[in-house]
Length: 143
Image 1 (cartoon, rainbow, N blue to C red):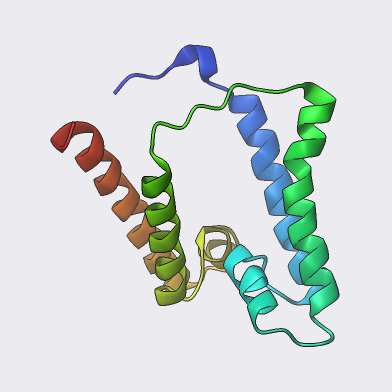
Image 2 (image 1 turned 60 degrees about the horizontal axis):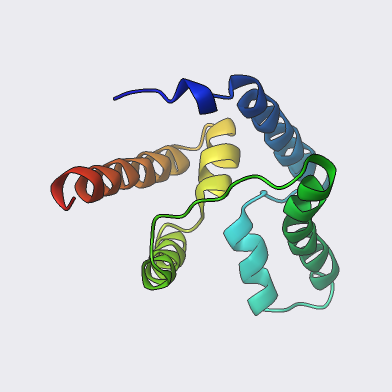
């Protein structure tokens, strides 16, 4: 394994982690809810009257953030080495996994682990392990 030192950004990663951790902590303290993206978006598919406004605002904020960043900092190069079909299939598999695992990386990996949830530890180990195996298989066995 080699580290691409030209694109190694520990300070940006640390800042992003701190902001995500603070947002998750504030969300659970202020709203009593877990900051799990799949649960928030899933709630839009099963609408309840009192729940809709904050869920829509949250999703709109997630969609607007990259646009605001691009406006403030400028466009960065984005390179995706996959076909549209592979992206769609990957998205469907991730969606299936979040339903089967009762949550996503943000719900289990950030919020669940910080609450010392054993179920979230198992879920996080499972999706991280599956990710490692998938990358290894695609880059080394199928290449």
